Image (cartoon, rainbow, N blue to C red; front, side):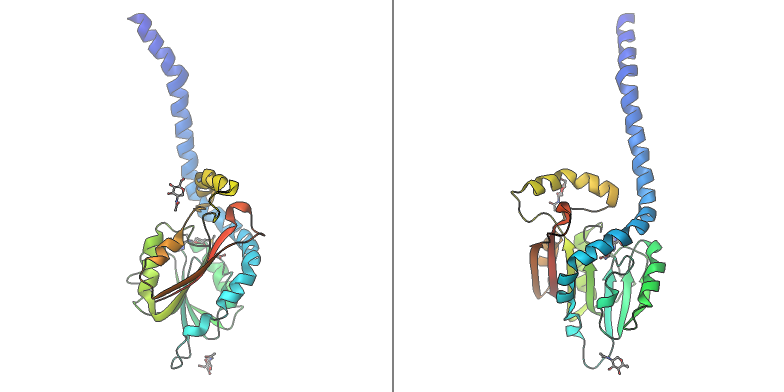
Length: 251
Ligand SMILES: C[S@@+](CC[C@H](N)C(=O)[O-])C[C@H]1O[C@@H](n2cnc3c(N)ncnc32)[C@H](O)[C@@H]1O
Ligand SMILES: *[C@@H]1O[C@H](CO)[C@@H](O)[C@H](O)[C@H]1NC(C)=O
Ligand SMILES: *[C@@H]1O[C@H](CO)[C@@H](O)[C@H](O)[C@H]1NC(C)=O
């Protein structure tokens, strides 16, 4: 009996204790990362996001060129909502007299967004909602927006279906949801697709970004009257972030 006990204790000390130690360290690391993430991201995002913005700018400019198409003649203002605006990479693309509602859960972006908005006289931020876009009831009225814009945000939201359903709710009939997002690799038989699958948890832990998202599936089934998008690979972007889906959906 004593021999078995000694063996058990030896086994315990050799394997279970170190394993439990590693587990606890990983949990602590995970906790610290989740707390640090909004702070670090607010510093890194403007740099990474600016680079990505320049890589896709040509496509963004083209897509956004008819952003004001839904502006009603009777109202001279253009009511738009942008989800996850970060420091405001898209602010230059809004038409004259835009009244912009911003939904951005990382409140550390508020200062840079407001500062950046001041450079664009075409645009006025009517409200900065420091929250996720999953449930905007009580904050944004039904059928109140001419357009909703999302760029590189769908990979970060917690619940894509909920966000898309809220976008549909708040758009005016005929209003449009514009999106430019990076997604799961389009070519399923590629090495990149395999690498992307392998890297999903790593990128998610480090950057809260779901690199294999297929947000457009949610747009397809959200009840829009028309959905139009293009799938493309943008060669200038890093491999894991190369596949994009851009277009718009009409309520
Ligand atoms: C990769 S950044 C993109 C920033 C900006 N749209 C751009 O194109 O440069 C993703 C943004 O989504 C925001 N975000 C994360 N979860 C969100 C949610 N549930 N609802 C709305 N925005 C969210 C993040 O705070 C971050 O600013
Ligand atoms: C912007 O608003 C001003 C004043 O309300 C108006 O005169 C102008 O025509 C508007 N611009 C557009 C593009 O609607
Ligand atoms: C993304 O990858 C994760 C982990 O491999 C998987 O659980 C999830 O279903 C994938 N998402 C999509 C939309 O394919």
